[in-house]
Amino acid sequence: MIKCIFIAGAGQMGSGIAQVASVSGYDVVLYDIKQMFADAGKAKIATSLEKQVSKGRMTAEAAEAALKRITPSADIKQASGCDLAIEAATENPEIKKKLFQDLDDCLPEHALMATNTSSISITELGAVTKRANKVVGMHFFNPAPVMKLVEVIKGIKTSDETVTAVYELAKSFGKEPVVCKDSPGFIVNRLFDPMLNEAAFLVYEGIATPEDIDKAMINGLNHPMGPIALMDMIGIDVILNVMEVLYSEFGDSKYRPCPLLRKMVAAGELGKKSGKGFYDYTK
Image 1 (tube, rainbow, N blue to C red):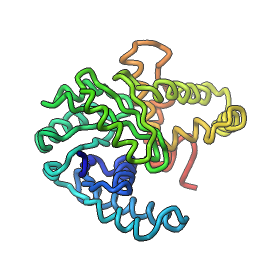
Image 2: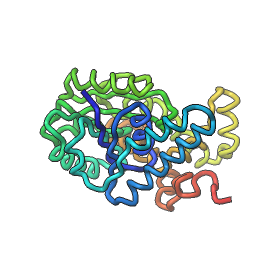
Image 3: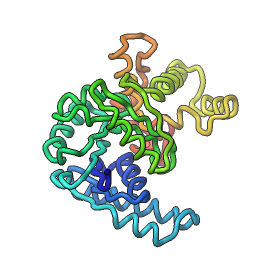
Image 4: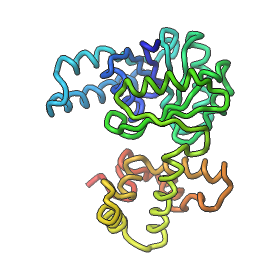
């Protein structure tokens, strides 16, 4: 039974997942490489919960209880008391592999390991551990407290028991889980990121302005947000990483990343998190 969850990475996704877990009644260790990062993640959750209280979506008592269930930490050895680790580090295969190896050494034998990766092979990550049958993908969507979907990804060696346990956990979070096999991009990113990439090509080729592309998709296809603004929210670097994985794994030119994405990442224009992407957020 899963009672305590270790979340590795206290950034936007990690803190969002920690909030979902704590509100659902689970004890959470929110880990990052520096205590100040872990503390900042918990502070972000506190602010988010305060907003929920002010909107009448939860009581002050429930928010306080959820916050108390979160322990920020820079000590990975605290994973030793947890039943599941969810990795939410930066989308870099080598960083994730090293983290999985470290977690494998710290977690108790019965514990499961999940990754929030949006594109990296679950099988590949599981292969660096001694518990590949207990390694699974648990892909949340941004912002994690709001978005209902969780992709549960089964690696080649992932056991059916592991998939079932994580599927049921996602349901206990109030999410709508779906199961898929380990394949580049899984379901959503394989379908959706090429569309975002094509929107970047429209800007790159001077076909239309970011504003008009977003306006067209919102009003023509009833999308709640345009693809250009969405890329800025997700992070240009994240979109580029996913497209590079798809292009590398499939070897198909239809997944070729737009050169503009590479230029923007090189310039540090990553979207909202850097203050500038396709749009300027410093004004």
